[in-house]
Length: 430
Image (cartoon, rainbow, N blue to C red; front, side, top):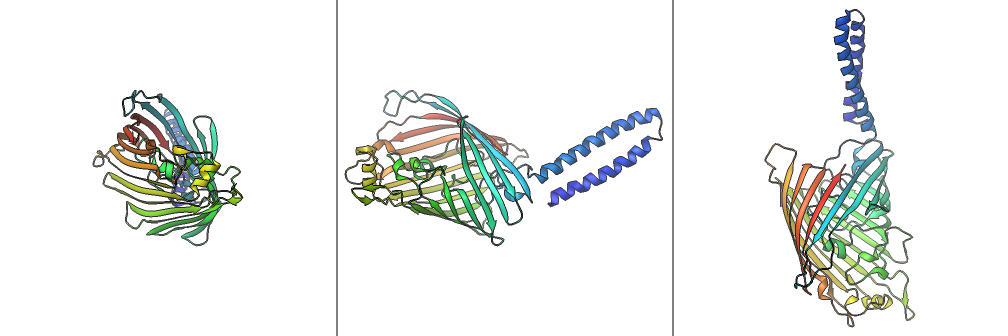
């Protein structure tokens, strides 16, 4: 039992002894005094019941999660199981997203996108800690109010105090959002184009590997089933995710990440994935390997109300011509053999010096992303995939675990067909 649970147990025992003493006294006082003491006894019983509930809550790992309590590279709610002594852990998060589009495109032509509001995600994390070395963690997701997915499910076994082995359906350890995708944690109301098209967030595959969690360095190395090149297209790699569903494993991949975390509030690192994406497909009697390298460098710094982040990511794909031929993608519809994107973003809590649980954070992000940064001969880049986006918004957190964000996103591209939009997000974690 943890320290907090032992403290509550001590309160429970002391309160129980006090209640017995009061009950003994009540039996010898007058009827009017009994009426007064009955109210006191009722109050004591109420407090005892609250202490009992708190003890049960702690034993189940249901203590309130803090919005900055990330462990093992996961979001605060996703890492709750690491904070319990033993037994069940339950957490979750969710977001509702509003998108309101401008009536005209960048070039003045009529826009075709319609305003929409979406119950985008509702998540429950289930975990179980068997002992100090072995635990299970999982994320069950409902998307768009009616589509169910298993986002991750894995077992950890600690080989030493800082090094463990992990196996199951794993989040690829790339970028700033793929592992830390709970809405109160990331800054903007929507995820970036770079961490959607180039790092195909949320990206998870079946695999096994090692992880380390030291005082100054955290790292992860996984062998995973690779992406499936049959799903690649002009807008990037997102369609190649297999998401653990009868995943083809003719081509495997290696994912690795390292982050420096030795300075409080500061983290900087690199990550990469390399693997074939042909998945056994053959063209003209020759197997198509489709070797893919995805990489990124990133940093995040949070101090005195400031939240600053930056990321650059790229991808290179060989056999892009062969994959385009197999996928019947011609001209500007083909997948690029080179992709590049980057963004910088930041926010400042204007209430950081005020004694209040509320946070009020203006934020901004500037981004460039091109899923067809280079093309093989025979395919041409579509200028509409060369995107530039500016986002300006405001986030209000009445508690660290709950957020309401509103942002104006200004989008342009090489074809001058970008459509500006308003984004509103209601998000929570627990």
